[in-house]
Length: 293
Image (cartoon, rainbow, N blue to C red):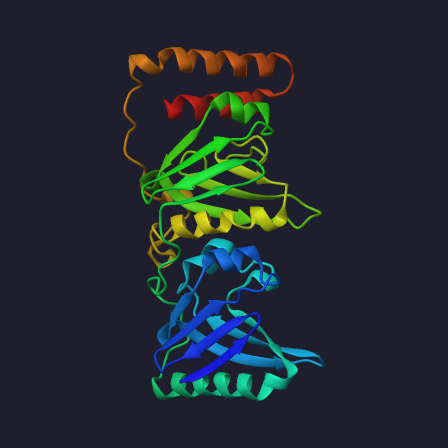
C-alpha cells in the first residue's frame, strides 16, 4: 500500500486502484467535498507526476481519454483547486509523494496499461438522484430525466417557457463551462433539434446561465457528469450532431395542458411585441415551448 495523507486529501494505492479522498479542511473546494471519494482503477490511468515547488508540491494524475465522465463533461475546465486528480503536498512530504507516484508508474508498466483512448467509461460518475441550485435555477437529474426549474432572477423568456424536462433519450450532448468571475459560464443540454440553436445561454430554455457564486455554480458539473455517464460513450459517435439518430416522436399534448400552452405562447408573444425577443429568438423559443408540450 502506498499512501499519502495531506490536509488537501488522501491518495491510497493498493496495486489496482487509486483511492482519492478529499480533505475536510475549509480550504478544500466545495465541489471536491461534494463529489466525494473517487476510486480510479489502474487501467484508467495514463500517468502520474509529482511537481515540487518551493513551499509545496502537487501530485497530478492524468487519465486516459474517454475513461472518466467527469473529464468528458467538463472538458478539463475545472479550476485547479477543484480538480480531484490534483493533490497539494506539503514540502516535508515530498518524498512520500514521489514514492506514491513511482509506485503507480511502476504498476502501469508491469500491467502494460495502454495510453490509447478507452471505448467505455471506466469510472461511474456521481450517483443519482442529484440536484443542484444554481444562479439561474435548480437542476435535477434522476437517471432518466433532467428537470430545470427557473429562479425568479432567470430571464423572462425562460420563465415564460416554464419548467424544462428533458429525457436522456432525447439528448445527444452536454456542454459545460464554469463562470470565472469575469465571464459567465453555462450548462447546456443539446438535443438533435437544438444542436444548432443560436440562443445565448441567458435566453436558452435548454441552458443554465451561470453568473452567480462560482463556488456554488461549480456544483452544476455534478449534474453534467451524471448525465454524461448515461449518454453513449464518445467512441460510439460516428458523425456530427445532425447525423445522430432522431429521438422518438413525442406524445401529443393532453387537454389538461392546453391552457398552460396558450398562456406561455401568449407571454412569448408579448415579449416579442415588446422587443425583448427578436424574430429569430421568438421562433426558436416558441418551437421549444411547443416541443415541451
